[in-house]
Length: 128
View 1 (tube, rainbow, N blue to C red):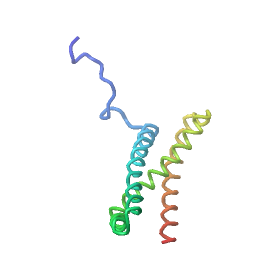
View 2 (tube, rainbow, N blue to C red):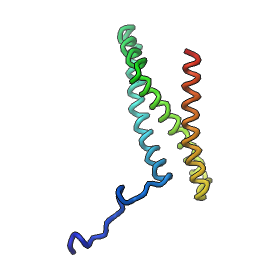
View 3 (tube, helix red, strand yellow):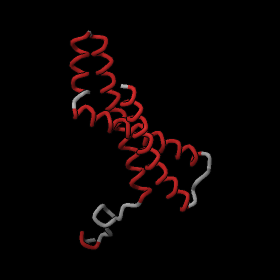
View 4 (tube, one colour):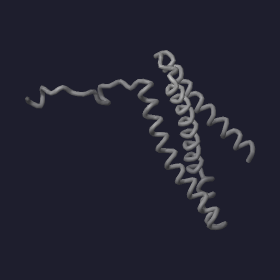
């Protein structure tokens, strides 16, 4: 059989991303981001245990614009992964498999994670 007669499987140039696939991929990506963010948290804790100079260096980095951007992304990943996990718990219980419900809960996950992130940052800024 020649190579030009083989069937082609869908790939990103042909396949149109759907909300469900984007949310599934996002759930995996935020899980990886949380693992990397945990390394950042570990660095912060180790610096706190190492002494004031090491802690000041980490705090200086986290207080920079890049540090805030990383922390904001980490907090969004945390909120998104939480909301998507709750959505999956409902699916595990057998609820929410109707197509309309899947899309509504998907958008609710995106909106809730954004709102929760903004609320968390508003509380953190207000208490600082």
